[in-house]
Length: 203
Image (cartoon, rainbow, N blue to C red; front, side, top):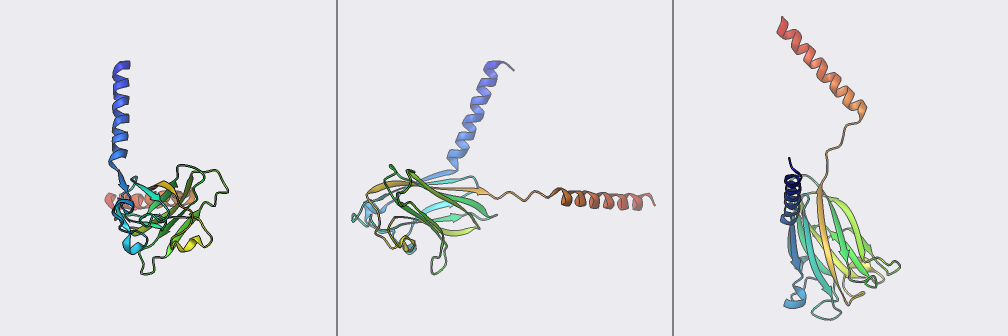
């Protein structure tokens, strides 16, 4: 194989990899600022799609205080596809470290229970806020709000005046690797079964 052929093959492989990643990514722009239809509760959350293993959901939103509900919490509904549980990461990115986002993950129960949350009270210089959680197949809600005392209730208010990108990313959970002792016992058991089978055939 020539250098030119190798280079072309490598580029095609990289293109296929990038294309595969793009095909598993979905982008969504929050509708509230333009339609004035609120998404400030799980019951009015904007539907953003289904996360497949290895897939991404990109959501672009805005917290404009007092403009079309922009100062309220933003809720987005997403699905974890059927199959095994997935390790799901939620990350919110803001344009500057001066923004103080609050990020929450809720279940689909009648009370929309907060499963996990985090906040930035501007004590660090990071533009990112993130956490991960193992999620079974089903419906969930991601919420972005602004920091204030009592942030856990996600009832609006808080720091505003910034845009954000919310990234949801999901990975399948690998089957546990057996410990060496368990593997040795399994191999010994298979060996014993093979021996019994061979003796029965030789009779």
